[in-house]
Length: 271
Length: 272
Image 1 (cartoon, chains in turn red, blue):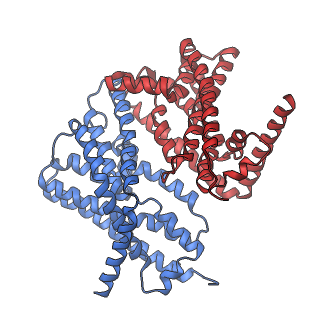
Image 2: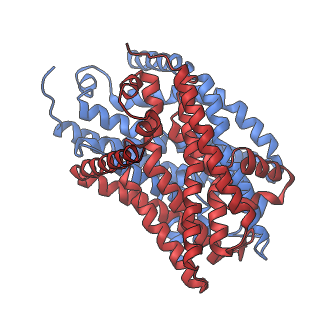
Image 3: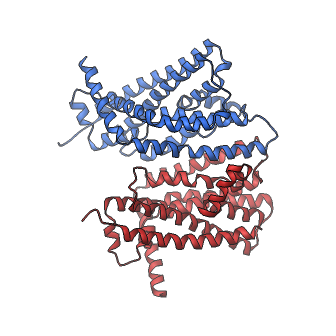
């Protein structure tokens, strides 16, 4: 068991290194993609800087809190996009073309292989900018976390990534039944756009409260970013913290089950 | 007459091809309105946290109306896949078929796009009508007929400018092997500069004035503002504003034609 675990770690590191070397083979293209990512982050930051010239708060988030929220959002989304988006998009394509057969014949766990075979390193700016924003917001507030709180924050980020990854894996697996003309990339953008802003902005309105309930408890995308960010700035909110850990565990288990169920319904299209 | 018949055939073929995707158009349009839901809640929270009733000259209702009108503008000016398609044809040598046959590549692409957009509008008008009906309270009412006429012209010109802008990027493929990363950067910048991300009035000072002078605004901001603020303008001001948009379209057309002609001279094709 321990040996199998270390084999998977070694394999993952080899895949990540291979992707990095491949990116550096087309250095110019890689740098332009990183620049494009950075530009997008700058635009989002610019937008909210302009907004805070006109308002004091968004929900109960002050300017400094909101910088922390954006930093958390960049960290979670950057990790999900860098590690899983390209793989899940590819999974839909493999199912559509029938090339999934080649992955299923490999002597390795299918979910591991299909979820991790590529790493999109051009998402690194998300992590750098996100990390810098989080540190800057902590420094500005003068409210540095203890080591334990810092560890908790990182664990919450991982739990947030797990929730989003599970959702993405289920969407990609559904390609076994639904042949899409629209790419997973595009669908993912529309599903996660609700998580891009603090969850409490939906509580101001009756219809918003229904949306909040659905996206918090049934399809918990709102949890993934708001909960780590709230913990980071308030250092309390224990019920939500525990709920995020629980949701991450349940999401991973359900997505694993759904993935295997989808594979059992898969009929090769190529051979 | 023969030329007209040729383009009419291209148009009818493209029309039939696009009608295959009618369900996808319908669902796709509905899905594209989802961000409006978050926009309504976000701006509601922004106004609730501010002591102002207007931000950058917009009331909370006007800002939602603005974003809805931006969706209409972009339905006209966005040309997904056009630039990358042109660059692909140049890179793969597919452009040879346009150079050796009596058909103009840009004319062919424009005719196909018109067919594509007509199918799109005929299908997407239903979800658009539903969403606009549900959001009717955000609008101050219908503008006067002259403004409405100017608005329709500005949308038609937004289509032309959107097409020419993408074609301009696409013909860069004559000189650059791979333009996908460049397209990503330009489209990201365009998202800000055309007013899709937020109303350009939000940018203060000389930078805001400069951004509002750039031609990007004609692809989203300008038609939306014409609808919202056109009633405050005289007929002459309206005509001048739309004239500016027309001038931009003509300048882009000249630039695309010039670059395409230069590109064809630069282009080499080998093999069958």
